[in-house]
Image (cartoon, rainbow, N blue to C red; front, side, top):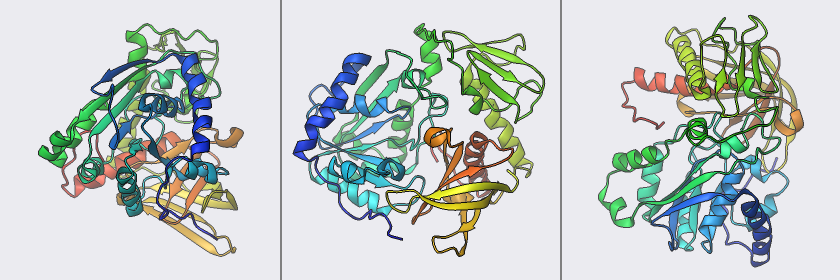
Length: 415
């Protein structure tokens, strides 16, 4: 099976594709009318490193808008190249398998800088599950130092509220706010060590879209504003059941104990249960519960039947049925390869600091886990009782637990 060629250097955007990009970006910007604050970036020219937070496809639209005449090479996950490899390569995109070591990526980013382009990265590497900051790789400071160009950030507020990851079927007509900022000049970059650079980046990346919505009194009045939220808020804080949450209209409900919450027009939860009002607080409570399981050495997804597709190149290959487990040792996937031979894919805890998941992926095909190796990407659709959100939280907490056991220093917000 032919594998994706990550060694091919990124290209400049083909001249005949630039008008198409403008046809996509300009009408969207005109419709959304983002409120953009420029700090030291009014007339900035490439090459530079752009770091942006990640909540929705609108992130790319706004990035292209603020970059103006600066040409960018975006790092895009391999699934972004599905059935459009030629197009993405010819608009300069750089392919990457999520949460894997990739030395070719560094080479390709250096090539982008050498061409005078912007090296554009979404370091959270996945859409935020509930509009708050995801983990950043500690290697980001090293990369900035290595590229030796100014570091610019684009932090967007409201993109998650406009199109939440747990229900991105349509937009909510929310006017977002963005800050496009020169975070580090080349001189500052050279005078700071890697830890200091990381601290500056982590500090800049702190955001909470639901707090932003409440603080700015942003109304979302649509009747179905809570539909899909149970995929993130999977555990009932009243009876602690993990498999009975559902959502409909503007409501969340536990079908086991019948506790119910209503999501008001400002994105806050109202309930007689006196539990959580702020969605990210509920999510972080779920993280705490997973952490306790790990500390007690009791975390396990159990062995799950699953359906598996893979992406060796730019198309899905159906591998059929298999089994998967996520436990205190990491991930193990049991399936068959392209020739029908038995295949075991193992990802140890130390190899993955985070996990990409999808909700109702590809036209409601199902919730799935995106498991990557250096050679392949597996989209795994578990069956039975499971929570992909819990697996994502557990992946991060298992990683940090292993670091703690080894006595390795943990820097806030980094993995």
